[in-house]
Length: 199
Image (tube, rainbow, N blue to C red):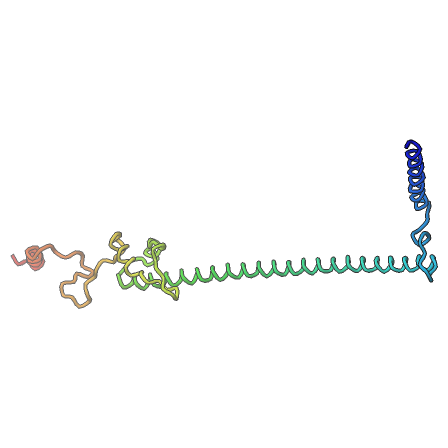
């Protein structure tokens, strides 16, 4: 049995040396075409064809990189356009909101001035500024609805906003331009007697 073991070891050593010699020959510059030839084709033909295939593959890799770069640029441009359009839309919305706010303010001012005139308010601008604008209600068209009731409440709280009532022009008891009216009839009679020296 010892002889069989030695023979097996020798066979294993021969196989190992052949295996190690094959990579050395590959490292020495031999190609796959030199080691295995295709029937009907020479090694030079195979080498030339391999170079052509490698050149074609390189051309396709270059074209692929070019297309990827162009696609990235297109996506960047598209994103830039999207961002630009988004910014323009936001700016337009902002301008529309500001215009609507100015319109509502103008409509409110007009409504306050109109109602203030009806209530004989001395200063319409003061009434507008004293009005609590956060309590104003608007209809579907953006016009204020409750200005009259708000102004009545304001005038009730601040009565100095109302003009003093003046008598109509044809009133007999009117004392226009002559000072204040006497307190009672006795004072009027005494004044008349004194002026005309009646007694």
